[in-house]
Image (cartoon, rainbow, N blue to C red; front, side, top):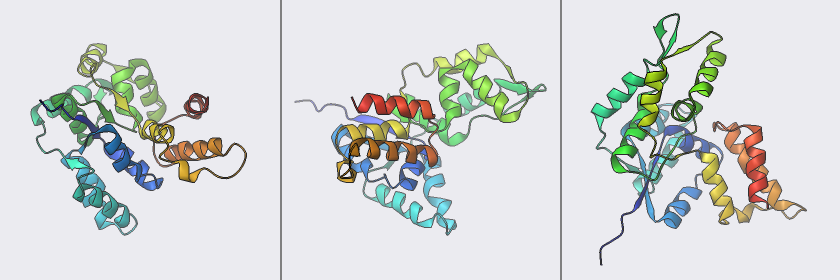
Length: 233
């Protein structure tokens, strides 16, 4: 009997940091087992998660925790990066927006490696907490508004390039750490934390969702309330 292809998910740097800093990284091996798939990071993401923080006493232990996940095969480093495609996408992305006729570097190599590798492997999803790339793919108007808010200046957008960039990612699902935590809650991975008080499940859910927000996930208060209403029905 032919073996079924294993599902693949790529992680950008941000979601791993969010989970580690929220003390929720332990859900990764359990989610991987449940999904019966593979969790990948790219070499750039590995450098950002392990090599650099190992040189910083403040983040050294978090780096060791991620390194342990890699050593145990929970996270695997995908090294066959389609570098030509990465360079092409970075060039396209970073020439799409301008301020005073000067182009803006809005996308970094690490996150572009993740999405390019996901495209190459036909991955199920890419986990990205940072708002910029997600808006770039999903909403031109919101992306421009974000940049104008961030830089307090009018931003011009090349709509043709924006649409061209977005078209590459029609087949890709973009998720955040907050969605992973929601799944973990739904399938009972967080049940041991439910307090023995009235509305204990709501207390737990509120706590973990806000933990992701405060530790780096780009999720609004409104979105948190929507997730809670859905999961507590």
